[in-house]
Image 1 (cartoon, rainbow, N blue to C red):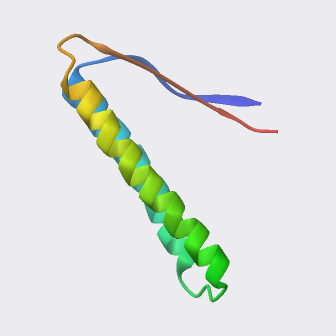
Image 2 (cartoon, rainbow, N blue to C red):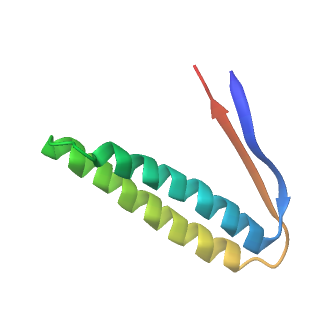
Length: 80
């Protein structure tokens, strides 16, 4: 089963805003998972994932900010 979350063309600022919100939700999810965790390896893995998401967001913002035309976004979640 697939769920289409995003499909369309967006002004650069709108695309950045939408992607920023989505990535922040994912970061918040990981932060909530860390609460109460004691396994050091799991904590490090989640922390690394949060750092990667933050880096990805930085790169996304930098890339989209350099564009002057509409940004095409497509996001599908596949559920198996």
